Length: 197
Image (tube, rainbow, N blue to C red; front, side, top):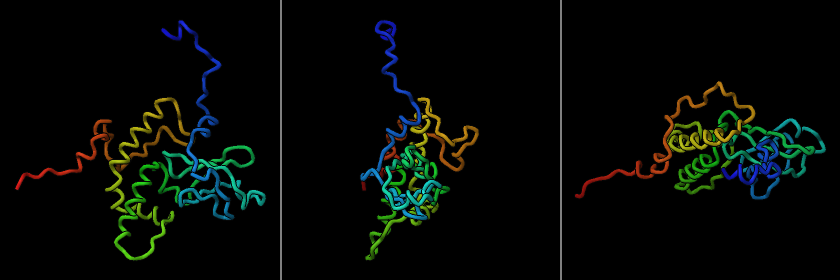
């Protein structure tokens, strides 16, 4: 009823397009990254590559970068006045993993190596190996279910990610979807109650 009374204000509508998505995607703290020859740009210990980085005038230059919080396998670099999608060197492992899941995996890796009295350096290879391990599957299964719900809600708004095939189901081998109340109470599920002694 409010729109009928006051009008639609078409000049204030924001198009949900590629430029809107690029302006709202998060950037690393520095906002840009240097293009390393043969490696690409480094965002949070992971290198991302696209063919535009082969140009000699682009190598060793700082370019603005953005990352997709719902897909750790994809980042974006602003090259030649346009946003170019870049893929990780471990794209097959990182594809579809969200920022929260990557943070949990990083914390778990640091926790495992904190017992040793040696310096531990996190890199993309170690992170990818951990994500493929059984330990990571156990630690991250609940987080993936909650992230899937958030992704479905985002797609319900009308955003269809480029490159995603609506006919494929990348949920194979995962737990069934959980309701919002189940994700909110996941801490209570982990605790076990014992009687008094």
